[in-house]
Length: 625
Image (cartoon, rainbow, N blue to C red; front, side, top):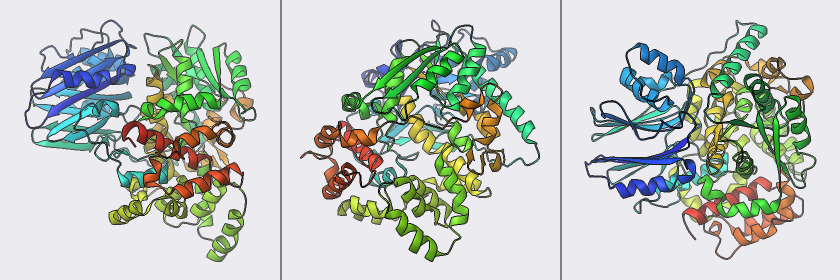
């Protein structure tokens, strides 16, 4: 786990060493164990290292034997031992024990197609001087980030946006179309960012660059086909094998590994399997919230840790912790999100970094196995959208909107009646309904958006197209796994963990697992209103039923209460201040109205206010007021 960056001039202009060094310095937190720079004419590569595998021999940039190929790499290739064996039998000689060198020899043997053989989380840049070509690649599901920008014939790329912004020519301008997407999906879908000129390399894609230009293509083009032939017992057995193997591979490390432990089935399953595979107690880390006694997971997590003989650590967070962290929160994230629990990942990572350099995380199972409430809504929507309009629009909708709070239910009646599937998905995400955005955005913003003639939903069209042959639920699971997961949850996990020099691993996102799950019939994912049906059946091999079927809590915090009480000063000093950046884009009167309705408990605008705060802090950090 590291940070990479670089510069490549398509015009042949030489790269200055100090420019690449500034980029690497901006990401020191991603790799406090070492740094390296390689400069050769129009190319510069930079690297910050967090030593996980081959601590003494894995320094980067790394070259092949003839110094014709150079590599900087962020992440882990979990199957590097198996690939190394294959390559050694083909005559390749290794000088280190690192997974980094496997990428180089794999490229020598298989060329660009070597990326298809990797099982891991990765973003890397490989320079081939024989072809005068730069190759950039990002892992199948986008666990590791990779940003880039073209500036006057020069490509800059990095693991973090901060590194790109060390170039004084890098523009700092809000992309208005991305702003509309942010207030629709709660994140900005790849390949865009909220910065007008800065892009993300999409998950499962590679970019090749030379003096003639650049090309981006998808190397992971998996298209699911539902398997209706296997029995449920066969599916369970196959899933159990793949899950065990994924965790076994991800246990590979030359430093101690821990686990972010909640009270839920996913992290508990990982703990059960880690405990079987480890000779020492597994380090576990849990977060609780001040005033969150009804939703805190501490008691249950403690019990689970004891059950498996784990080393247990916990931390209680309060509104003061959040407010203090907010001064640097968006400097860490670099992209605003409407995820009110995002900051908690920073604190659990901080706690974990006191004992380990690597921590497992249970993310990814909910998107693949239909673990969220919205997936029940997707199932109901196929029926609801066919009901008569007089019933849904004239009776149900007015009744629901007359209820106080109930943001989720209101979003449901707005979205479920949509016959167009992509529009339905967009409205399921968007807690800022169309009528709310019409009041929120200032006139000049709406004018610009109308000139674009491009609805936010079309940012997901390229993901829906390959799966239009599938049922509605399978379509949304496929899209979520490739959009909201990498661009929201995984981005947050990477940035907040790396802010603490900690590597986060996600065994449920082994791409073999995802490919298998996407062939499982939808009725084995959502059975009636029972979510993650087959997943829970399968993990019964390792967990007692009281854990498997315990009510899901997630990373819930009492932010709704905090925003009405102890975080009022945070709101006043940021959103409502005289120099608020939000006033430039949003109607100040409408923001005040939402805050007042929230304070009076007439509406639950927790997520709405939190997204505005996130944008405000991002703008202050990166754009200025």
